[in-house]
Image (cartoon, rainbow, N blue to C red; front, side):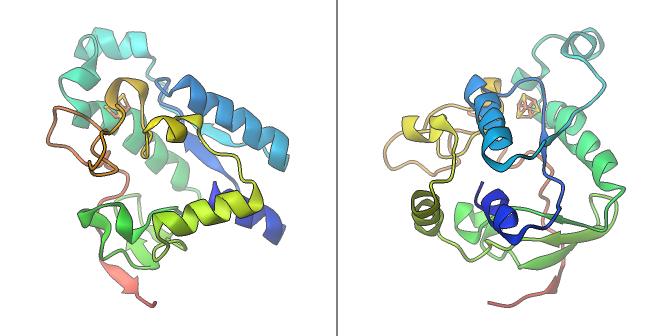
Length: 194
Ligand code: SF4
């Protein structure tokens, strides 16, 4: 949301998209509606053609509860890769303080996993507090779940609230040894600055 707000101020016509797995929280869909109204943009819903019914027929009911890696590969990674194939770069809101896996995050890296394009992480050195300070100062819309102990919001079946003292991403894929959906694998940096 910070990036969308910064882009709006820059007046640059940069496409904004989200991965619509058909399994997002109602609060997330409500936020997308608020983005439309506030910024006058039409976020692109990037999604698989595989309906939830078709996925259940092919892979069984509630794939996310048995094999979340495959579910993410079908509903997030593959659709995003197809979408990004037409671009030379993408911009993310990743930050180093989000997890151990992200603590070496560069500002710019080469994303071979998405077909080969630049990946730009302008908020790499922002802290969580920096983000909230910006959100409050600029009255940026945010997901209502953040006020209900959901610091990291994914799909509805795979995200729970976190308990006091837990890692901010502890609510993602509870019960599984999985910390990333697959759209952000670690890749070699081509430029690092601070
Ligand atoms: S986060 Fe869960 S429901 Fe969403 S695509 Fe991944 S496994 Fe499937």
